[in-house]
Length: 403
Image (cartoon, rainbow, N blue to C red; front, side, top):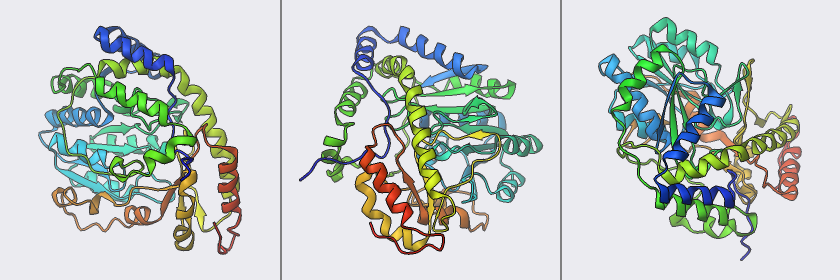
């Protein structure tokens, strides 16, 4: 059996970063945490920040900070997104209102968001899915009008910008994630940023909800394994083992949020510089694929709003029914389905959301038809060409393709 298989997404690591993580693990991590804070301040210029053990924890404590101000008012979440957003809401224990998404942009269906705000949502989470920015001007305008806090989930936003600022620098509160598949990695960890006075007020209340950091030996070992396996020649082995769940989307049960682990901070402090070159590589490959996708009715890339610059952690493509049936033959080159269920249909979570009678057609359509193409620097020329050839087989009329 060949072990060669493309990674769906890649976050650059180096031996030096692993060494930095090991030194932080053994030394307590205070110096590494300080370096990470300095890097965040340099690139995002937040008014305040907290380092957390994951992006999920960062969002959970953000919502806890908002809840202390809004007395358990509902939070509005996108009905289609990473399941970790549901985990964060469950950790905070807040009432949840869902709003629909527009498949043409992956951003909010604005009428649906307005309805969620009218029903009492006092915080709105918007997510830059796969690195495609949400129209933050319009989101902030809607929140300001309703006196709600805008929480910008930039967990997938590495390399993306809005109005020439990094994704994560605009919302009253913003979430960063440094997990293994986020483009910029520490093998784990996250950050909560406050970007204005309202965000600072929430951040001050959130800080007391954060538990102490741990050394992070398991995180370091996982990162070392990631470094070994992040090669096309060997990735097929772990990808073929179902119990590892690589490439799968799973709901994770809440755990108490804590500070960033020492090992993760050490890795992140060193890998930060590596991410910039990777950001350029992703955009170059995405631009090449986007050129092939133009005018293909069966394969549609969501539009990037004016003012935004996508980071393209992965390239999202909404596929027609015939294309979606055939694309499974491209999994070995890193083409993967998106999230398989909308949050309105996620068992164990959907039942606790506030039922408003909305049908969420956009979110449910994305669960059926959204796929992502790899854009990372380790994608081989042969695999990139194979994806392009498959795209080219679809004519403007959506003629049948053969993998």
